Image 1 (spheres, helix red, strand yellow):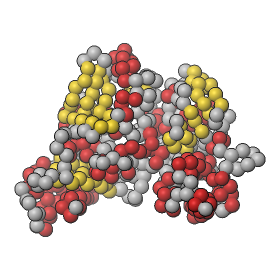
Image 2 (tube, each protein chain N blue to C red; image 1 turned 180 degrees about the horizontal axis):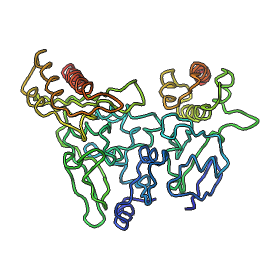
Image 3 (cartoon, rainbow over the protein chains, first blue to last red; image 1 turned 90 degrees about the vertical axis):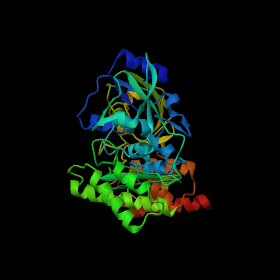
Image 4 (cartoon, each protein chain N blue to C red; image 1 turned 135 degrees about the horizontal axis):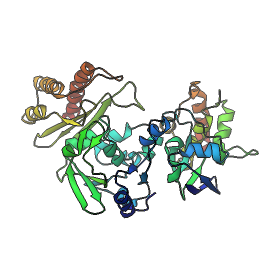
Length: 264
Length: 154
């Protein structure tokens, strides 16, 4: 149990590879179901530095319960879909980042914004890693074994419109089958990022390029946008959905969110 | 690892194994079996407690992380002689079937009413959305808590 970030970084330096405990909502499930017996754990719950929320920098220890009330509309929408009130009171954005599940609800939002992942180590100080270099595979990241995720850093230029939604079997307490964020800037620049359709969060860049050139997208352009998003995702079939369903749903969801951005 | 923390207003000490959950320590070491062990993955809310002011699933809290913490379990609400208003409201509405989920509902509802003495129906539903009753006894629970909310408005 580290009191403060410096103590946590020193502990991680002294015992590289120690597991990092944020809200516990992922790690403790694995522990309880007896899959996992961590030998060394550093708790970050008592590091107030990680809970700082600024307009363009979100501390890794900020909980979903706080982010539910965020001014970042799509992030707040995503936060509201995370588990139950009990889970949202404990779980953090940094935990989502560190766990790097393909279904992490906060990750498409970071990808759509081209956010940076700020990490720190005891000996080398802080560095900012582009999200696309940070997430390397299913629950795999480029975080070094003496580093800790300290924040998500947002660009200066935030979009005028941003929308998140996810698909699951019901309205609450679901792990996403597909999740998506669409952002649109006033100059037409549009980005779409999706979760649960690839090992890491995925940007549909060809679809983005096409739709960004459309000042007032026609029905045909919206349909083409959906088709291109569906073509760009790389889903698998698992117990939650088939790859075909995910591919179809990704296109539908992306179009729906874009329409919400355009209507706003 | 020795952990000292405050449970229901009393200072308690427990000897915990590294990865053990707060729920396990409450039930097996501290003699507080009110918090129930069911899904062990944060889905059902049966183990709900208030930890440092936040409603959480105690099955997902590592006990070793609780040094200096303040915990309220269902045993901390009401007494043998006088039920907590939430407990009384649920009693009056017959909001208990098998009873296994009841402690979690009591803690979640009491946590809600502490910050909002007269919640609207959708606020009650939202606050209880992390608690599952597999007898599906939600109607009576809601009726009881809505009646309590009416009193709060009176």
